[in-house]
Length: 384
Image 1: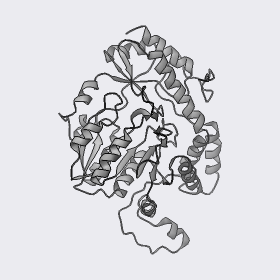
Image 2: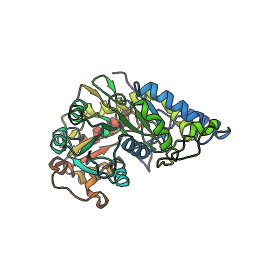
Image 3: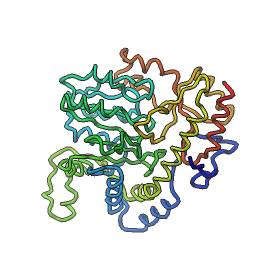
Image 4: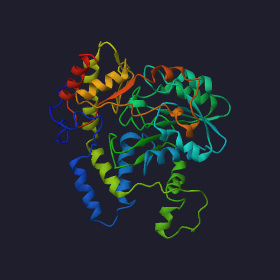
């Protein structure tokens, strides 16, 4: 494997007396500053030509034959996907218990009933066997999250979905650039959502993208993200000045799109760097007692390396030990059934129960070098 240059990608310091090695760091290319400045000096700062260009280039890269629709956040993207999938009040969906609350919260907007599926203890992705137990004639969609950047068992999920004639909706907030059995995440399912929140592979400050494979849904999606207005016809002067469906203010701005385009143009380097850092973790932590790296053994899919997560013994001691060595760690995401607003604790999630007090996320961001990760691994090998 080619050795990564021993300096951060964007020439910025990471380790200092106050910060040490941090979990996350925004990846903002130098060219983004120039591109945003151009937008701020021009006519369009809201949704304009940069958004259209970002959508076109993103779709060409990740969407297969689908269409990419830029929005204001990953949560916006998920809500749009759920609407376009035809979900309505009283419908039932299956969704992972272990994810950002953004995956689940839109169901509360919609009055949709959700059933939490357990985790796969080897990947922390949705447990296909539990999905099989939960699915029934009331189920209208299956939502999966590619935790950390490792794709879920998509063949098995699609087999279940075909049997019940329901869509699979992919939350790929962590998984930009991941592949599954030679296919890009983004061209596998009817709906795939991406996040461009501050610390993702690509950031637009905050933002998201929805990839839709069914071209007949695109016009509706474009209306819904703009208050229900047919913006294209309005700009042409041929809109009938009527809104017939509930819409939202979910569009991206040209300011965000300028950042996104800059990051997209150097995405190969970004992804390769993160994946190399993950490989250093795999090598450095292999065989170390008391710690098991998540997502390190699959060969039929590529990991997008947004998170590096491990199962550790004595997590509190582990975190304290890392802090003493100026290494940040944390849980990042939590089981969604801990939150009262989402119905509270479930009692049918044994794998989630088994790892709840043992998973930990280690530093992984574009400002780190291989030497930084080797230092983390060397520190862990000393014991905690």
